[in-house]
Length: 82
Length: 150
Image (cartoon, rainbow over all chains, first blue to last red; front, side, top):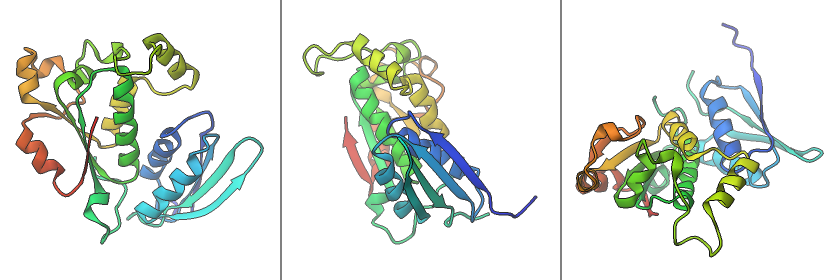
């Protein structure tokens, strides 16, 4: 198995709370330490929810970027054993 | 499944466990319980749902997919309006919420006395239900966490 850092895109556009969070969690379950997960969301709560998730679970919020009509929120998996 | 999200050590224990008493069997009361439960599980919390009295309808095989808006909803709010909104927003249905909760590690418990009162058996409940417990078991499970009554 490759140890290379993976970046997963989770498209939660059109999904409402807690949809983006549960989508992120599903990606997190199969992620490896160091992986990046980028959530695309239109739900206005996603930014604060995912920021809270990162803070509570000890993972790292990398960036929050507004694009046209949606937001890309990237987290790094830093609190998961291999 | 093992708890996939590891909660940081040293946090307030209340912040690590969420227990919800689901006492109502209406569509409008089932949603908030499952939204909070599923969000809690995604946050890495240990989550317990305790279904009691009318809440048993939510995990009754024959009723789960047909919950109605209850009398406490806003005047004029109808079951059809809620179902329309759920479809329009592509929100999960209640059976999908229940399955999703189980998948994320939420524990579903049914109240033994209610089951008896309603002449039901474990076979009448959706397969996501983990066990049939009494009040003291729930109190023990929920100890040192935060508990909500819905």
